[in-house]
Figure 1 (tube, helix red, strand yellow):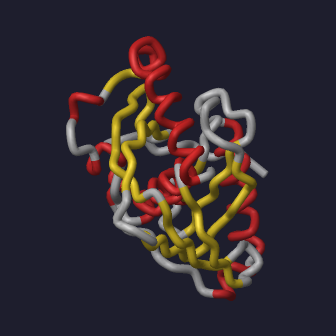
Figure 2 (cartoon, rainbow, N blue to C red):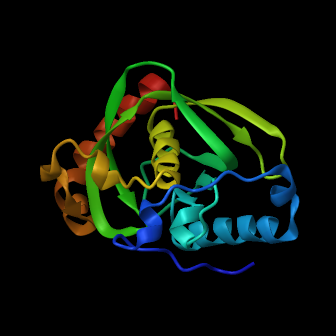
Length: 191
């Protein structure tokens, strides 16, 4: 396993659409090694998720995991989930305002509307079918990662850029209010 360099906003790879993988590609030693690198890179950077395009690979792969994350101490735990060729579909029209950050946009956060409940379909890292529902704050994470695979960054989804702030200013001025909002979202939707 190896840590991968994370692409930063402005690099063209972050604006490109990733391509699906075949079962043969997924089973290859190269892709399985890449998935290990992707997970290790996410954990090392304290990300709640990471997409392949963020580490310069235009493949439809992302990983999500939240466990004692210092960047997101208010996020509910979520087990390591690797999704190949993902599809994320809203289950309702209900949305919430999510304060998001991104490993590819260092030191900035901003509010993004996200669907409160989604269905995720794709393949697991062994090529088996995945289909599950995700609600609440975790649903926002899956939508964020899928966006990366389609060349979309959270700043593109912001309705009002006035919420854009540095991490320090988020901690100082916004964190407590957002933690209260997260508690309400979790109480209503679960994770």
